[in-house]
Image (cartoon, rainbow, N blue to C red; front, side, top):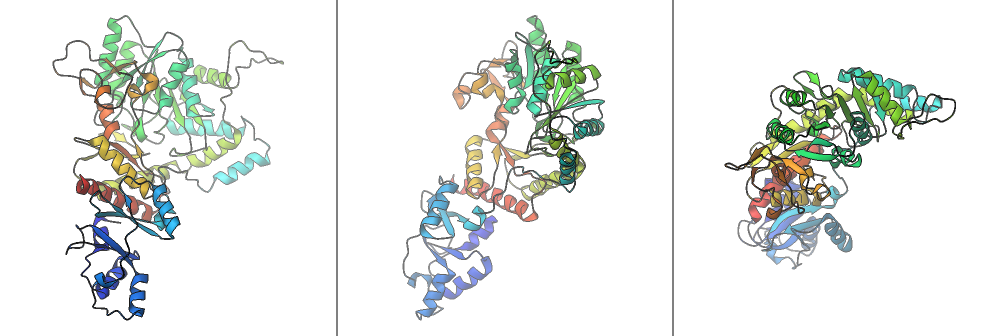
Length: 528
């Protein structure tokens, strides 16, 4: 409910039963919150009133002009601001009630949870199937092509390559598998150094470590939230001075938006470092008219269940280099040699996508542009609805970019951003809305403690190259990278929120999220 809608639920004890009945009809929530004081808003919660309470009073002969204070006293059943959704539901079930007020430390009503909303979860990014997928999967069953490989796999590869504007593609069991294959094809192995965006999901970095190489993490730039060209230049210069040439660079396109390729590619080309473009989150995006996933020597996509299109699980490795993709196909089918028997000269993997799932993917590709338009519309509705909220900055769409808005993300700025972020996430979860923090950067992850990290900008007057290592503890002041004033990815994580962004969200769900975010942010101000 909107902030003003919640205020309308609050009523003073001197209000008449007649006024309470009219307020119940107007608010249509089935409950009012009787609070001390004359304004019915700022005082301590005294009790709740339902239409049942008013009916019983009328049957007992209480005059309609009588104040609410004449009703039998019932201490309210409430929860505090730290209560979880489970706590609320347990209280509802124990007392067979459908509404639970939330009170602050002073006992003032600040929120209301209803059973109805607890039965209607809003997901962050749920799968959205079209009309063709069932028929394509049925075709796979009818033809008995249900194992890995088959005509749907061939078709999916060809259709995605054409959509992205590359010549070759290999369908894999996951985006992570595609990343692993891509790094191996670029020759990454023990002792190598690989540059990697820090603000990303851990799957971008894990294959580097699993191949025995060492990741060096690169900060984001403030506008697009993707890899900072300034930080990349500093990393390349520092490593070059130390006689190190990175074997590859994993450049992530975050939350449906391409990185600044016009700035990043020349730096990598000059240093002789091939790019593996992690476009797992950005299928359907473009950068100055060129599709995301068409910039790197190799690029990967993900079709996990939460992505803009899905095969339930799957990925794709793409390139204009036919030899690389041919080698990828061989490695992904256990690297079997073309012999009558099972002959192997190198180790391979079971990484190919099944024909059944590829059928789903082909159907999903047909509705990709619709899904992009829907997610962009979700973002725009959020942006407009929350335009007046101070200290809230949306992930920008810089000139030349077309983002899919796979996830609608914003950052809360200013002091105490992380505490306010967590309070908002708790508030939304209490109302059965799934929202998430922005990715925790890799240089703050315990798994990568001690790895080198290059920030967007060093501390002013800081002598020496702008690089740091993260202490083992990634959280709190003690874990801040040494000597930094502009660690962009850390700030984005500490204040960043990803809202429900599914292309299948209903108008009512989108409005509900807008109202709850506004109410949750206002609540922080009230209870500060």
